Length: 140
Image 1 (cartoon, rainbow, N blue to C red):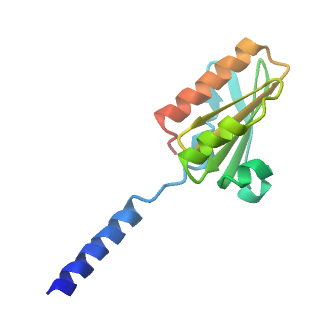
Image 2: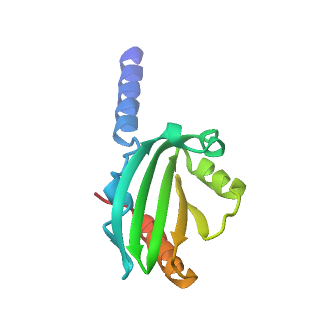
Image 3: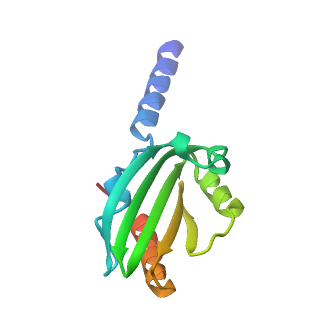
């Protein structure tokens, strides 16, 4: 009788773990066709974790999603989906600042945004729109 109860509990736990497993958002959900009032997506690609910079790879990258947006300039954005939110936070803390770029994290996403031919206010609007999008939760 006891073995049957234990097996039932283990089966239930396994079912719950499977049902509650992380769901990978499709690239289109992470980077919508438009962000803010001025930015339109012009390209979207997904790359394997092996393409991550070494510093990020050591922390645990699951995949990389890249997008380019056109508007009042050009914005290149990358989301490195990390294995944990702690890894994402650590990546932000260890990343070296670069000109015309900003980084942030949301849950297990480490996000890099670099802009060209865009003024800082326009780039800030893009970053704010992307942060708001990820906070609301990417949906397919």
